[in-house]
Image 1 (cartoon, each protein chain N blue to C red):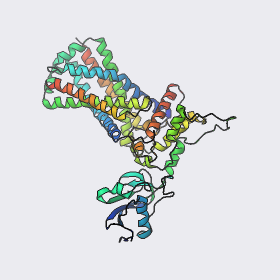
Image 2 (cartoon, one colour):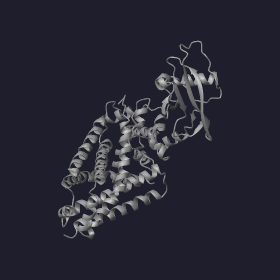
Image 3 (cartoon, rainbow over the protein chains, first blue to last red):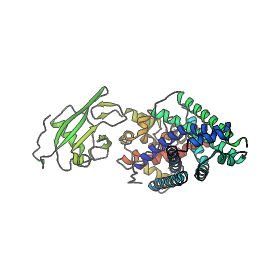
Image 4 (cartoon, rainbow over the protein chains, first blue to last red):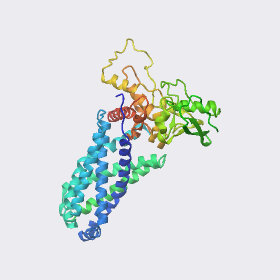
Length: 114
Length: 114
Length: 250
């Protein structure tokens, strides 16, 4: 307990958690509206999907997967810190969150451009 | 604000996060799989149309995300934009309704028909 | 603002000290030069300036040895104790020291901040021992190795210096936020076997501005000169609030 020195990592982690949450909240309505196009039939949705078949849009989808993974895994870290007994494993948790994010992003990247 | 309300909002945010954990994992893996070799409307709708399972899955996801995001945005409004009084609560309610309505509409769009 | 050459200075090097001067209505930085002496603390530097250059400079200190917490101020952007911080640690190769009063608190004058609201929040968090109105008939056994007592011991050495309060972002974002010190003290009392005010305290820390507003930035734990961990205490408070909510005790 004495000599506990957390790193600025937790400060950055908190900021990223908030910013990713904000961006996801802004994106979500667009996501719902796009899917809602299917109400007008598959062709309407297809038209939209063709329009999104550009590298720029695909790149932003990768970014979104990244944001979701970051927020999701960062959230798990927070839940662990708040609900479980205090652990000094913070750096490990952040590394796991970072590593898993990279995994998800890479998997999506490979498939969306593959 | 009353201690009870603050505590309940906080709890709802944490509980929706916990509920969404398996949902997000499933969603990420589904997306990674679905974007292989391009994404078309019929691919999406084939999977989702007429499916009670996906209807329940996505409805739950939408409602949790709407509540979680609404409470999060309320915190940002209070801390970064210094909103006070009734405005933060109204923002949360409006956000929840907006996301829930758009989201459930999207669920109907991809589950209905077929 | 000429510098005074002290006969005991070993080098001709000087330290530039920028000090915020002013009061609640506003102010600005003034620059002073002092000789660069080895093992000089920030408190030494400020005292040198006040005695030899600017008698009107206002600052706080008491024990000078890191026991009272009175000398806390913002040093090159970070809240620190000036009596336990060496000039050379902070100024480094740039040779520049920037001093300002503690963040998040109103200024009285120059480097002196008004700690009133800090202690008000201490009270609002019910950071005071509650014996329930009547002392126990017999001693309450306190086992130093029990989980409760270990939690209390980890949090109890707070001397209210205000460094954590100044460091906390949520304090700067939300004027209702009770802050790390007050919440840390509430936690040490909630886990105290002898205290009788547990449920009032749990209610006090779950109000708006209570423990639930902590976003675990951990600046408090990073900067506490006594190496306490208010984030850890606040995590404990969150669990206490959570169970009280689920049990309908709030």
